[in-house]
Image (cartoon, rainbow, N blue to C red; front, side, top):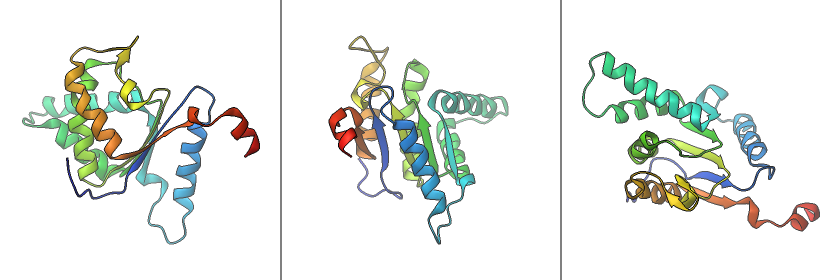
Length: 170
């Protein structure tokens, strides 16, 4: 575990369909861009579906290999991503692919250590990522450290913990 990170914690917002997760993330992005005297502009924020993001990560790794690059390509890609957009906003964060599961720990460690901030929405709690019918996916034990990292670097908020009555009263 790192005791000092270069960026504030992000947000991992989860709950059932229709609880407003995406709307809250969009409000965050809009508000971040409107802060007076802020150097943040929309070009520094990448807001995308998590599956699309991971496809981009794999394409970048493949392109680097084809260009003859060797070594830790995940680190290279993570640095590129943070340099392009230090604010990463993922809608529908879920892990269903073993290749994604195996690189997420390294990818996000580098993103966080280089100042990246992640805001993610999901229908699943972090501990339920990469699980089907209560069972972990292939090599699940290798994925577990990522869950700890995500919890350490995020304010984890369960929207299902708020009752319908509390929504109405608010």
